Length: 112
Length: 114
Image (cartoon, rainbow over all chains, first blue to last red; front, side, top):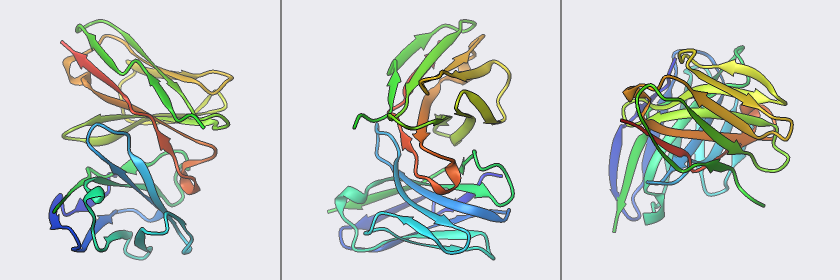
């Protein structure tokens, strides 16, 4: 049950905002967000847990709608360094706590 | 603090051969997960180990196997390689379970099967 990410790709100019969405057909326990730059390892951005707890970097904003099994990542006042592929990973509520299923990614390009 | 180390970084193998990839997690981390990354499929879960026990396995054929040692280092093995096994193999370590813990990824091993 791979989560679906949208959009698949987005191009921004520096300073513009973007929203990346992640939706699941299953009830979720947690949603994780990672960013991967070309040729590098994915880097942790944020965890959103059922019940409202969030852990992550201060400059990253995200939401988790448990009823709709959806999460959104908000990138505001984008910088060149935001470029990369963003992945959401989901953990099914009531399922194994040892497995994250990732979406196919959203390629974000920030131009000067 | 050293990050997650994967060796080797690049491998070229012939169809039918087998290969072993290694992952050294961050010191103190007991959970190691493996993922296969391809352009079309994204990150596909292979398996997860915690304290030498496999706790979960993805939908991959039995040719894919792994293990974890007492020092938390992990290896994955792929036997009878196929062209479709060409991919970037990533491992990630965390101190606890995935659900509420961030994971740290290694830079991966790029496997090419010819």
